[in-house]
Image (cartoon, rainbow, N blue to C red; front, side):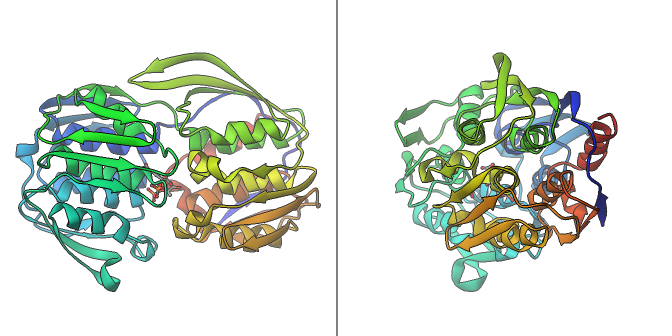
Length: 428
Ligand SMILES: O=C(O)C1=C[C@@H](OP(=O)(O)O)[C@@H](O)[C@H](O)C1
Ligand SMILES: C=C(OP(=O)(O)O)C(=O)O
């Protein structure tokens, strides 16, 4: 349990956030497959990314880590049949991306995860991998972990996804990299493209035309140095905290600003947010910059459904901004939120309403009428890191104390979140 009390003065100064979670997972996986040594700087040390690292070790990959520096002695020849079950713990990215890799090896990989992950849908990756030639046996009519994959010679295919998903796209591209012929993935909207960018960085050739991306099989990757930018999704908690706490002026340094991730900035700006990008540059194939955020009175917004994939993990924290904005805000077209670490639509509705927010559940989103007085009370993260951090930010603005149950979930993506938040608010 974590207690949050209302903050009395604005958040001031500079803060850095840990490395990007999506990019850290990908650097481990591509580094493990690539020939030679890959070095990762500013790797995210958190439960999800360590789950990927430990699964790769179970395949026999040699990986050394000192804090946020990782060295991988890579080669796809180093992979051998894991002696035990691969535990992806709470991480959808781990289980889905590694499934794409597992499908290319002629031995058996057995995957599982924690109670949350074992409820999340897996057919979206397992079915297309089967179509490419892998053998899969999964619980729950083929949709749930635990599942076993026996791979081998895959055939490239053309896939048209019904929903934008970077995890599905990445799994298929990783399978396609080691398949015969070409594999293409076409999405309805562009999901995060870190895999494509990093594959190019590791020497692969890929073809992109609009929403279609194609990879030809049999290409070799070469070990690289990867410098991971700060995680935009993590930064978003401090962005919204600074926007809603009066008199705040915060600079968040070295944040990844890949446009497939920064939909939240577009939406917040429409709400009236004062956010500037400073020192914009590129590092390891990814756009990076500092964000200067000042307290801003916010007005309600309707989120256009086509922007949802570019801010898929930011809805819990956007809901905080909406709760404190003037007027009626709406999110539609975001039914994917129901199959994340928790059902995020339900988690937002149940916990925010306990704190006095006027929020209505929709099948594919929610409506928030902003401006109610926020009240501290006991709330629950539902074991979901992004819900825990969002409730903490909402708690900064509440009358009385907010007690967050299962707050340790923050360690999934940001173990030091509460220390950093209290540094910022105590300094405030
Ligand atoms: O590829 C990734 O690193 C991720 C993709 C997204 O999931 P989907 O692919 O299910 O949309 C996102 O929600 C998740 O936090 C990380
Ligand atoms: C959905 C998330 O991650 P994953 O799918 O990797 O569990 C997240 O971090 O919000």
